[in-house]
Image 1 (cartoon, rainbow, N blue to C red):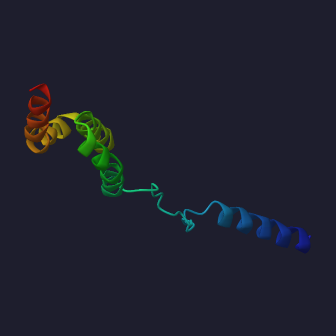
Image 2 (cartoon, rainbow, N blue to C red):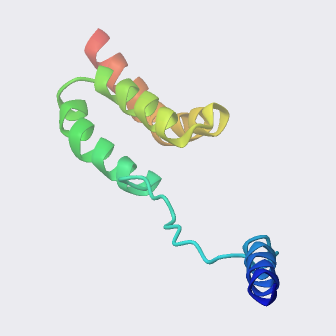
Length: 97
């Protein structure tokens, strides 16, 4: 009878330990995208800017790619108007003449 009681106590202790509220440490690594937004912007610049020197249409492509990367269309449009629109208009008018 004593061994059955000892086995029962061991089983009860094992069940209590298994259901304890103690959190186990998990090795969760922070998921990182391959490139950060600034790295993506640098890649866009390095690929598109040489083409933008050749034709003004790539200035628009550059703005669209940056807007997609930033995921904020309003802010991207304001930045496009501030930094690219003046030069773009000059180039378009020059080509029209």
